[in-house]
Length: 433
Image (cartoon, rainbow, N blue to C red; front, side, top):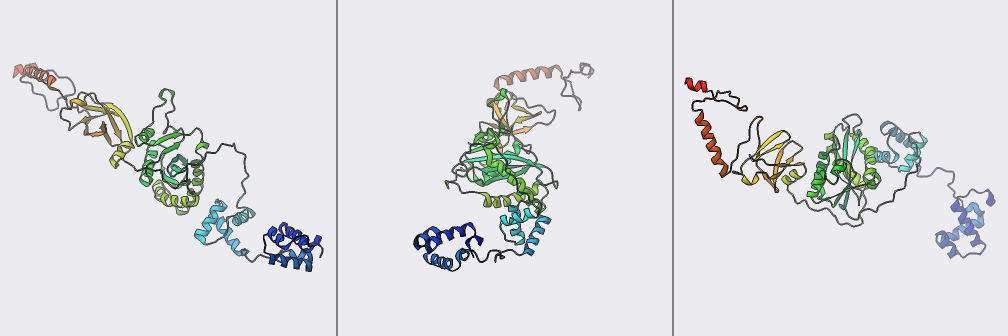
């Protein structure tokens, strides 16, 4: 058989060229072995075949025959039926994982990709031109920088309400550090997720967010004023950094896309239909996600720091805070209600003092003065605060009350007397008495 009549692969053609030089004594066997990455003994075998059969002796004898490791056509049909029935919108990689975990079919993602394309179950996505953005190297340590974002989406595919997933992704490792489903992307949602992050890992060095209203007040007349969330981070000694574009916090943006694909389908397979059930499943999903997609940091140190505040102090920090001034009667007005300071005796020093009203997301109200919690009582509607007098004014008040009482010695108010309005003594009744 002549050289021109033999079908050879590129690798076999290279071998023929080298072995021919060995047979023609233009190349030493040791040098040929080095070039081909073979042993000298194997080169001798190849040279012997070439002398006996020419280039055909170096062609694979199994060409055109079914490989020993070929997958049975019946298995292929079964796999494609499973994909068509249970995973019709899964990508080849994710579907391959489910076939291994649930059905015990072990095959490569690329094999499944080829089958799905040939069967019309998957279309290869055309690469599109994207604007180039300079890449920023990852931070070195876990906890150096945590990218945070909210992802509004139909997470339960109509089985439950549309909601937002709050996502905290570590910049150094791409690991999910904290997640949570919430009705909307609000300050409460981020403070709740931050507390979960602290409980699991501690305080990071910095959070990296966009310029959404939770993180930044976007009004010129209030520029530089911190939001409730940023104020809480400053109290906890955590830096808050705002990204100039979505691409700047690309790790959390890419994580959102992966979650909108994988998390949605995992919850579909498990029949999860609401926020409460979704939050209960998230820890298990995060562990699997981090195992698959997490990377090792360049520095094994953990930059998270211990949380120095106790649970009650965290309650007072991770809430809404508002400044108020104490009146002379030691009362505080807040959102239409009046709160009376109690347990401070005459409380002279609290008059005119600036205090901080802390409103929890459950509606509970607390009042702080110089970091200490004051005892307060919410007054009932129409109830006036108790007057608080110092030594100088008490004498004046007593003398005035005494004079008024002496001016109406027989005045007897009715049981339903309207105390909230002014009154006039019934002089006619007194005279008649």
